[in-house]
Length: 420
Image (cartoon, rainbow, N blue to C red; front, side, top):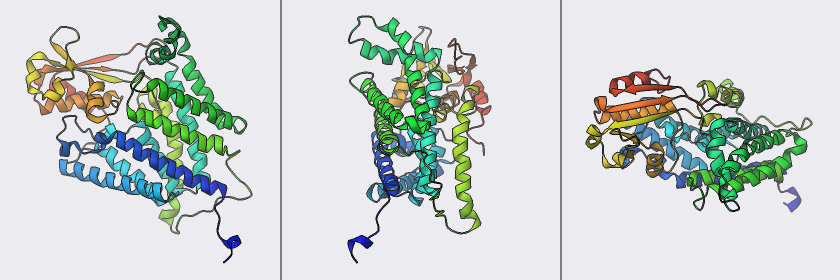
């Protein structure tokens, strides 16, 4: 056989393999820097509670976590060594799904993105999967920008980010930083829009790379000191932007004269999987619209670096502090001087799991319920449920709960976790 007869990869197929390897290596790195999140708390005796989407016995939780982790690692290692867009990504999505069912804290934005990408890469030809991945990527920037066009972002996180570079030139940058903070979501909105238009796609990809590199610098341990998971995800997204939109911008993403070949096995069930994946992808694109009214979660709506999210303020009375383990007491502080100690969820989450707290009132209320019932706090716990903030004024509505009974009743009002 001469060299002319050897099979060669098309540029598009080669891009698919490179994309697969990039995400596999990136996800392995992200799992590595957030490793406590993926180890069952029952095996480590950690006090940070596991809040599942479905109530399962302890043994089933541990088994699901171990099986899910095994699926994820097998799929990612195989794709890192011999990349491809095939069933191995289905194994990754299934594994992450099992892990999230056991503990919704694991539904970090990059984990959610990996589940979606895994379904697309496993069930659709790369040419079509790339179109969906590209549109979903653009939607991440668009929804993220929409979440930041908000009073809370401009006056808190946005101002803090902008103050970092301004502080190099100004003694008191806060006022100017507040005025300039609105430019961050506007820039992100423009990036998302440019990625959708063939003529501007390459420029949008370059702008996305610059944005992620800038965030990496501003959020790093030398500046705002965000988690390594956040920093790593920015690196992965920067490399993704280079692959999809700069290196090979894919003018039109489709070839009407050379349609993608259907690679799914014969049979009704197998033939139905691609259609189900397309419906799922459409849901991912549309569902974030409902985030502000409380239907779709904040992180799964790409509400990133945005403080408008709903939350629960958990406080424990001084009389019950000794009932709690030291690892919990270390994150309690009497902020008002009234003997009610506020639980600092964000530091507790970073210390225990190396990731930000899941930004959802439902999830944080569940933490309060677990603490109240596990340590028999009775009337010594109170919770303030705060709604999503108003986009224009930053104001929130609050609901106050006192005692284990009220906390448990309020938790039962939510759809998740599913009851037995």
